[in-house]
Length: 285
Ligand SMILES: NC(=O)C1=CN([C@@H]2O[C@H](COP(=O)(O)OP(=O)(O)OC[C@H]3O[C@@H](n4cnc5c(N)ncnc54)[C@H](OP(=O)(O)O)[C@@H]3O)[C@@H](O)[C@H]2O)C=CC1
Ligand SMILES: O=C(O)[C@@H]1CCC=N1
Image (cartoon, rainbow, N blue to C red; front, side):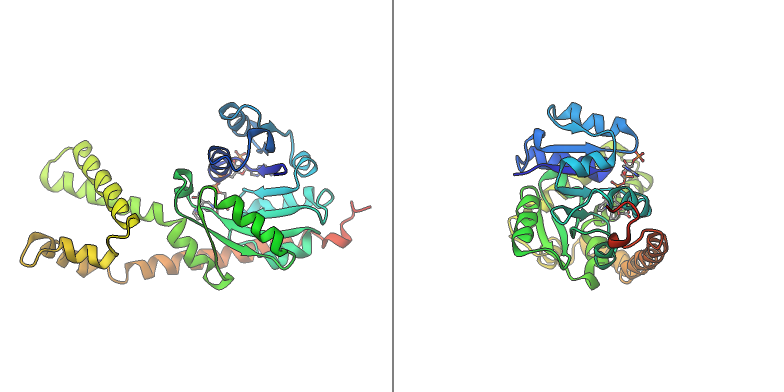
């Protein structure tokens, strides 16, 4: 396997670096990383001796053919201006963010482009990552990407129209469920006086156990609900409160994420107007 470069070793870039190495998809010497604030890239190399820390983004593009661009959407225009000259048709550029359209990226760089949206669950070699492939992705490149990410996740190809909702569930989902669980815990403390520690422990063990059950495919969500909800028992009483406020709640969540996504797409489009198509790049010799 050739060298892979990660630009941006924040939350997701560093998680991907750790996952690629922990899963043995890559040896540390095959990874080159950089970050605007260097200490974050240096931390990756400290955890994995042998990883190269590049001093800038162009060095990463010079030393690796496959690049994972792990920065936020508003950083794309300046990074693409930096990288345009370095990227050749032999490179592969993988974005991990949703609002940067692959079609637009293909106009700005000469290489193949793809999207792989990770999830924090990938840090536990679990969960899915969402893949979308640009028009220059050959069957070989597609296999290469799927094989790389399947080392620590389940890659799923998602049509562009369902990318946002898929990411809302798989990537934002851990934050949404954590928020709900924190409320389950806080309300338990307020209502009964149980300690936060005890309630948190019970909640976390419950979630871990539930994930194990689902993993073993012994239950679907609805059969699990039915099994626990004993006729005439207490769960049904509790569910009555949930039935009054939960249905439709996630529609509001999705409406908000989709609205923000549409805004981000527009802002990114405006920013990318300042990046010339790769054929016209002034630095191109
Ligand atoms: N967090 C999540 O669970 C998920 C996030 N994503 C997507 O991943 C993207 C990154 O998110 P996340 O990792 O959480 O964000 P972070 O802010 O943690 O990481 C972004 C990193 O990019 C670095 N950076 C910014 N500009 C540059 C530059 N010009 N050159 C090099 N490095 C740069 C930042 O450096 P500095 O330290 O200087 O700020 C930072 O470390 C987002 O677009 C998000 O939508 C996708 C799925 C899940
Ligand atoms: O909050 C965000 O924008 C990112 C996208 C998916 C998960 N986190």
